Amino acid sequence: MTTTLQFVNQVAIEAGELLIEHFRSRSFDTRLKGDNTAVTTADLAADRLISKAIKQYYPDDMILSEEHKTNIPLESVETPTATWIIDPLDGTTNFSLGLPIWGVLITRVMSGFPESTVQYFPLINEIYSAQIGQGATLNGKPIQVVEPENESRLSFFACCSRTHRRYKISVPYKLRVLGSAAYTYCAIARGMAILGFEATPKIWDIAGAWLLVQEAGGVIESFSGDQPFPLRGGINFAEQIYPTIAAARRNIAEHLCVNEQYLSRCFSKEIGIGPMAYLSRYRIEQAKKLLKKGEFTITQVALEVGFSSQSYFSRLFQKEMGITPSAYQRGERPSRQGQPV
Image (cartoon, rainbow, N blue to C red; front, top):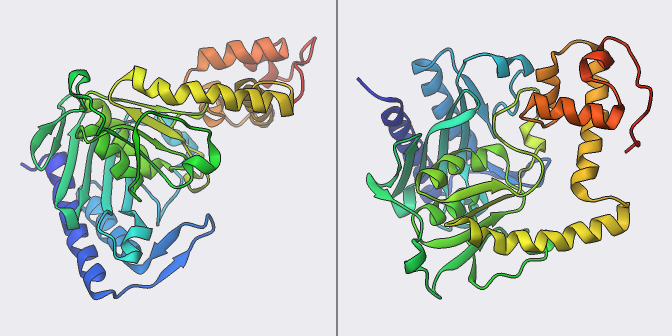
C-alpha cells in the first residue's frame, strides 16, 4: 500500500521531470502576475499534473495552489478535511533565467498543520521530505540542522533579495541569496545554512519548510503578528505574506529579532504606538465588522482576523471594547470604547 509520503514523492518527481523538459527545451512563456512575481507556462503545466493526481487519489481533500486556487472556504477550518498546499515551481525567476535552484513543493495539511511534505529540486537531484514525528530526510537519508559545536565561520545566512530593502539586519555570517524561498529553509534543515529569512513568502513557500525545519531539529517562526498555522479559511493567500525566520537554534534567530526593536521604535515614532499594538487594534476593528454580520461563530471570527486562540481573542476584545465578543454580536454595545485604529 502506498503511503501519503510515497505518493507525494512520486508526484513531485513526475512534476519535476515535466519541468526539466520545459527548462531544457526553453519551451515556455513567462509573464508577471499582479503581485509582480513571475509565472511560466511550465508552472501551470506542473500545477495541472499535481492537482490531477491529488484529485484522483485523494478526491475528498482540498487543494490550495499558487497557480490554481489561492483560498479555501472559511467553514473548512472546522472540518477534518485535509488540504494540499502546492507550489508547482518555487524559484520561477531562477528557472526563467536558466539557473538550477528551483523546485516542486507539495505539502499536506491535517487539522490545520503540515503533516507531510516533499520539496524536490530536480536539476541538483535533491529531494527533501518530512512527516510529522518522523524526522527529515534528504534523498532518503536523515538530516539535521547545524549542531552548536559544529558552527563555523563558514556558516552562512540565507535570505531573499527583498530582505535588506525592508529590514535593518546585521548578522555575523556570510550572506547568500539562493533565489528560492523553499531552498533557503532546506539549507537550514540540512545543516548548510545556520540562519535564514524570507521577507515576503506566501503560504505555499513556507508550508513544507514549517515541518521540514522542525523535524530537522531547527526553529522556524513568523517574524510578524500573522501566523500561517493553524491554516485558516476565508483568506486570499495570494495577497497574504508571512515574513519567516528559521535557524539552527533559537538564540541564533535572536540575532535577527534584536533588530526588530529598531523597526518597532521607528514605527512607534511615526504612528504613536508599537506595531503589535497597532496590529491588534486593526484586528479588533475587523472582528467588529464580522461580528455585526452575525454570520460566523466567535471561533471563526477569531481565526479570520488572525488569532489562533479564541480565548486570547475574547480577552483582548473585552480589554479594548469593554464588552465580550458574544455580547457585541448580540447587539449590545460597550459602556466604553477602545481607542480607534
